[in-house]
Length: 418
Image (cartoon, rainbow, N blue to C red; front, side):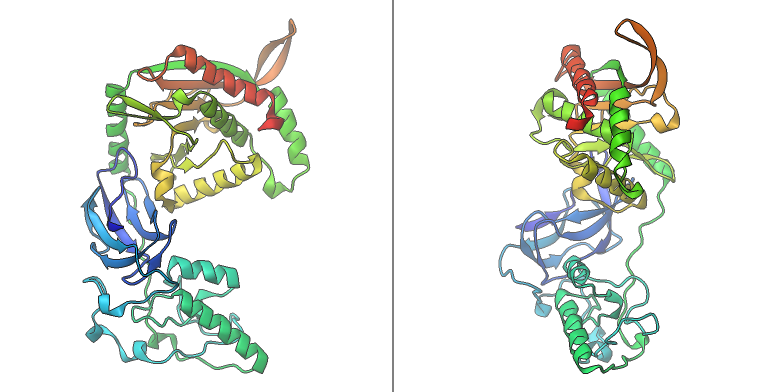
C-alpha cells in the first residue's frame, strides 16, 4: 500500500490535527478498520483504511497538525495474519525498550472469573484497545476493563480478549477466583479527547466554502408544494404496528423520497470538478445536522436509496447522534453525492440552499403545515410541505430540476413503496 496520507474530509478542509492512533507498528489492518482519529474545523473524524495491510510505521505524532495529502503512516500489503506483532519494527512514536516498566514485562495475571461491580478492574475508565479487539470483546460479551494487556504500551489486542475469554471459561469449570494486583501496577492509557470546537473557526470555514460556491457555481432554484395526506396516513398506520422505539418519523420519508429522486435524475447526484461532471452510481445522502455548540455539518447517509425505511430511520438517528458527539467516519464526511437540509422543525416554510462543492445540488424541506388544498374541484385542508431544489446550471437546467421535484412528489404519494 505504501504511504497512508491525511485524507480530505470535505471541500473546506486543508489540514487536520491527528488526535489519536488506534493502531501500532506490526498491527494487521483490514478494509474498513478505523486506524486514527483526526480533528477538523467541524468535527473529530474516525479515519478508515481501505485496503488490507500491515502497519509498518507511524509518521505523525498525536497533536500534530498536517496538510491534506501529507503521509501520516506507512502500511505494507504483506505478512497478514491475526494479531500480528512486530516489536523490533517500532516507529519513533512507539515507547523505547528502556521506557518499559518491569510490571509491563511480567506474565499475564488472571483477572476475576466473574466480572461483577465488586471486582477491581484492570483499567478505570475507557480501556484503550484496538478496533479488532473491541469487536471481538463485543462478540464474546467481554468487559474490556477486566482484560490484562500483554503489549508493552498497554493497548489491548485480540489475543488479550481471547485469553480473557479462556480464563473465564477455565474459572467457571473450577469455581476458583484469583485476585489481580492493584490497578496502579498495570499500564493504563486514557484516550485523547477531542478539543473544544471553536465556533468562530467553524463559521469561518463554512462562510469561505459557501462564498466559493456562490462565486463559482451558477445556481438555479425550483420549488414545489407537496401534499403529504397519503404519506402521513400510511405512516400513522405503519407506526401503530411498531414499538415506540422503532417508529418512523416523517423526516425519514422525506429523505428516502429525495434519495429516490436523486437516483432517477442523475444530473443532481454527483460531482463537478474543473467543469467536468461525473454522475455517481450510488446515492449517498448528505444530511445537514446542526451542532449543539453552533455550526453545521452534513455527513453522508450511505446508499440511502436502497435502505429499507426502518433501517434508514435507525441510521439517520445514529448519524445525527455521532455527528453531534464528534465521532463520524471519514467516508461519511467525504462521500456525500447530494445534500438534504430540513428546517421544518424550526418552523421554516421553505429553505433555499447553497450547493456544497463539488456536489451539484441541495434539496430543502420546510415545515409540514395544514393548508387549503383543492382536491377534485373541492377545497379541503391537507398537510403540505414545500420542497426546494438548488442545482448547478452547468450540469442541469430547470427542466431536469422540475423532474427531480416531481419524482419526490410521486414517491411521497406512494409511501408504501419507499
